[in-house]
Length: 408
Ligand code: PMP
Image 1: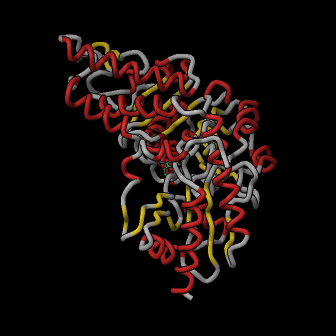
Image 2: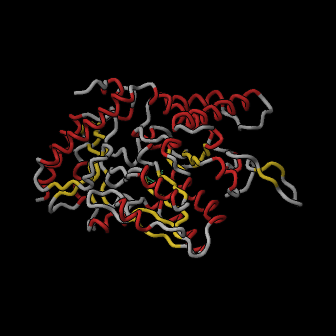
Image 3: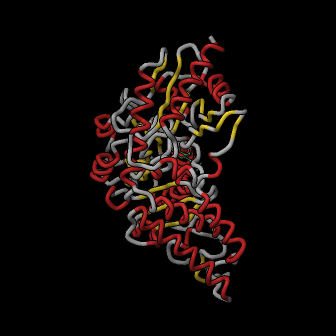
């Protein structure tokens, strides 16, 4: 019951139209990665067929063309996330590399012994481990921010933790394991009051219309192209210009230098200072095609459709015997993370796959939140995107009943 023409958008995604184990595919693993519309696939083929060349060399027409498209892609990302300039958009391989870049460059130059880094209890491992590595090197501490029972950062507990030794707060805008949205706006305000910087892990937020970096007021923002209907191997680190300018380079090589001499090397300006070596040109252009595609859709209707899917799935879950939804906050993206009484999540995932339904099971690369929730075997996560339908959710619940008969 929405204005969103889901059948029309489904036609744009070739992968959705196939059978898996004899059943039409129901793809509900969008939290792990999203599918690619034909225009993204076409952009990659076109680049390699017609424009392939190295960038920023300026020696010939193809190189100029590749450079122009590569830099236009950066500008499209900047506009999409509300960045005041394209030079604050640094290409990386993805969220993981973006966080590692900040931990290594900002962290190595700014952190001292006794400093505190706060991350939440619900973080993906990629927003825990890079901080642990730099903290060990610097004699700093990484401390978890507690959660509420609804699966969000506990703001009151967070406020209590803040003091002048907290130098970095790095937190997911949206939990990958639960789909809950953290109160990041309030967290940023509180963290800035004690002089801490705030990095947002936007891996799960980016596809749900939640990313406006300047309005949010964060200091750094990370996301992956493959979770935004773009290719794998391309992602973004966004940062405040003054912070990026003051940070030392992370990797050294071509592109990132101004001049190289054995008497001393000087470095290029941002963003190039952080882009050593030949960049992932084709996939940056592919990501821009994905954003262009998204911008061609009615974003309000799209959001309403996703929220309708969530509400429908939650209503079905409430009627499903033994099902417990994990992450009950009202502020949530279209993710249903659940357990089923007496059923191992991995077993259920396998039986769903046999019926053509793709979900994720286990700890979702977020072991500390599973420990916090006392869920040793993790959950089953059905994560929806705008190309999913109510009928697919019906298929999920029918398949769960079949699996239950088999298992119990
Ligand atoms: N953070 C969160 C919240 C995620 O969901 C993911 C991907 N599952 C990552 C970080 C890591 O992203 P990538 O593997 O694309 O670097």
